Image 1 (spheres, rainbow, N blue to C red):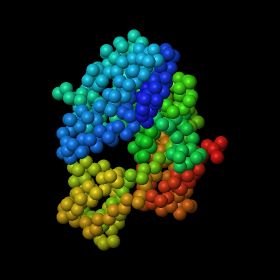
Image 2: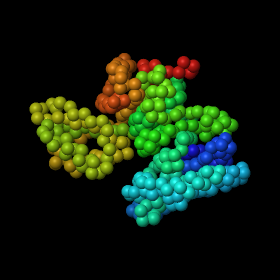
Image 3: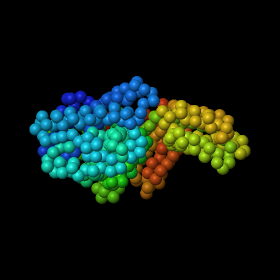
Length: 417
C-alpha cells in the first residue's frame, strides 16, 4: 500500500490512513506501506537547501529532503500502534534499498527484503519511507520527485506482493481529466503500456518510472482514493479502483474493451522553430546534440520544406520549464547550426489519445484530425507511436479539444450530467 502526500497531510489524515491500513491487515493480508512526506513538506525542505546555499551539496540535499518521509513513516506507525496494530518503521538504510547513480536522482538497484518479509509473516505492518535509499558508500539518496511510487512498486516486487495499491486523491484512472470533462469514466483496467504512455503525456496519476518498473517486474497496480468513506469502511479487495495489468491479463479479463483507453493533455510544452537551417547531412544533429548534452528532453520533431532550395525549417517541442535553457543552448550553437531565426511559443498544449486497440484498428488518427478540424482547432505538430497519437494545438483550445475527442471516440459516460 502506498499513500501520497495529500493522504499524509496532517495527523487527522494519517489517522485515517491508519484505519485503512489496519482494515487490510485485519482481512488477513501481510501488509507493507510506503508513505510520502506531508503535502508541501518536500518543497519546504528544498527551499531550505536553496536558502542555505545556491550551490548546495547534492548529498546533503538528500539528507534534508529525505527527512519528510521519515517523519510520516514514524507517525503512521504510532497511529497504527494506537489502534492496537503491530507496526514499525523501516528506513531505507535498514532494509537496505541499494541505489546507483547520482544523488537526488538515484535509481534502485537491489532491495534486501529478507528481514522485512519475515517481519510481515509475523503479522507486523511494515511502514517504509518512500523516495529514498542508500548509495554504495553508505549515504542516503533520493529518487527524484514523485519517487515514492517507484519505491512502492520496487518493494512490492522485492517481497513478491500479490498487488501494489497506490492511494491518491482520485479514485482511479479516468478516460480523461474529470475536472474538465464531466462525462469522463473511471476505467476498470488499463494495460502497463497504456498507463506508461498516459503518464508520459500528461496524466498525473502515476509517476512514469513506477509504471515502467511495474511493467518490467509484472507488479499488478491498483489506483484508489484514500478520501472516500468507502475507503475506510471497506478493504481494497471489495472496493476496486483501476487495475494496471499486463496486456495478456487484459485480453483474458476484458475482451470487449474500448479502442481508445484515455485522452491526456499536457500544457507544459513549448514549441521552438529554427528557420532556414542548411538542408544537408549533420545539420539536424548539430541542433539536437547540444540539447542532449544539456539533458533537455525533446518531444515532437518536424522538418519542413524550406522556402529556399537547400534550406529547411525545423520545429520541435521541449518542456516549458526547459525553454529558457533551450533557447540559450541554441543561441550558443548558432554558428554550428547555421539557422536564420529562432522562434519560441509557449502558448501550446499537447493532446494525446492512447489505446492498445490502435494496434489492430485503422482510422484512429483520422478520427482525431476530423473531430478537431470540425471545431476549427488547428494542428501544429503530430507524433505517433504504436498505441498513441499526439497533436500540438493552441493552449486556449485544450478543454474544447478534450471534450470533442472524448465524444468522438465514444468515451462519454451515459449517466453523466
